[in-house]
Image: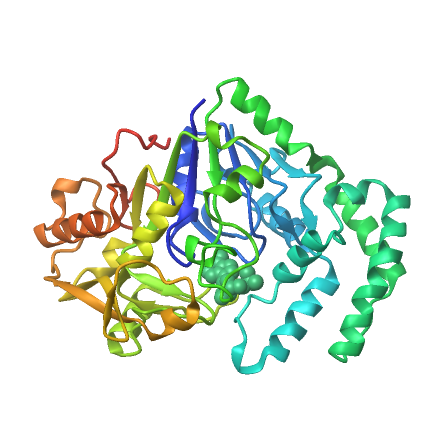
Length: 431
Ligand code: IMP
């Protein structure tokens, strides 16, 4: 029953795509459990460079079944175009399954996301405007359309007649937007139905069968712990639970079936969108990281906010997810930078804070307290053995391990699969 989860340890964009692609070489099944096409997972392998938003990053390994679980919200247009793109580049997508319990992002969700963001003015969240929040609102309000609803067209039409007038009332009366037509939406659903039908499945059963037969299962997180609806920097969060609890709920599996939880951390910190980020660097160092690492959103193209490694947030996420081990990515980005800094605590109104405050209003006022370390000139890019790292880089990794409270069992030194240092015996070897 070897089931491992890969969780974002920071604010998303930690490099989970590369990690999941690497680990998928060991897996029989890879499952996405939360979020939607707000995620952007970049994978670079011998088949080329791919930017995935919904399809699990295990899709490049021919023996891997890839599933999109009930916890995901799905924009069918995006999913279909992603599948088309993969297929046109020679990647077989017939091994993909989509949960009939997953919720559909409808066009009015996208409209509402945009209208609500405009309305928030200066306190905008900086969402990806992909309709994620409004789709999860409908799920919780029990007014959502589920993927399975596409397969029962009579019930679907009835449901659209019940839901769409409510949505139109909000769109037109609160936000002065344009109303949606039920028949147009229904026709759109029929088109989606036609193409998605072969992929719609009771995914929870597929996973449970895989678990029962001892298959290797990888749970692919999207976004990151600090964007978790309950545990992140609320309200500057996404509308789902990227943390480990979300994996259980979002796939219909028992937490007891999860053997290991790997938290992915970038060697520094980035964040897209608004909200507190104590280690943000608004100077030339932040700009240097952004340029060197090309820190621009995979989904929206927005520049990511860059800063030093925030070990307070990282430790919080380690404890919250009960991490078995950490995975450190993009260490090579810090090559040639000196000194390098790690935020080990915050100063909040003159007091030392080592725990993550629950209120964003407090976190906005937190000033980082840094431990400064010497940088390294010898490049780490592409290295595959820990002993080959320059001593200063080793010390940096060890400092992070100490501060975060877990070993970094895998270190990524470049975007390609093989640019990886595997230190752990627990983390399965890809390929
Ligand atoms: P939403 O998920 O589109 O509602 O956006 C809410 C917040 O989460 C915004 O700050 C987004 O920038 C952020 N966010 C959502 N998905 C990702 C991701 O995959 N990586 C990084 N940030 C994300």
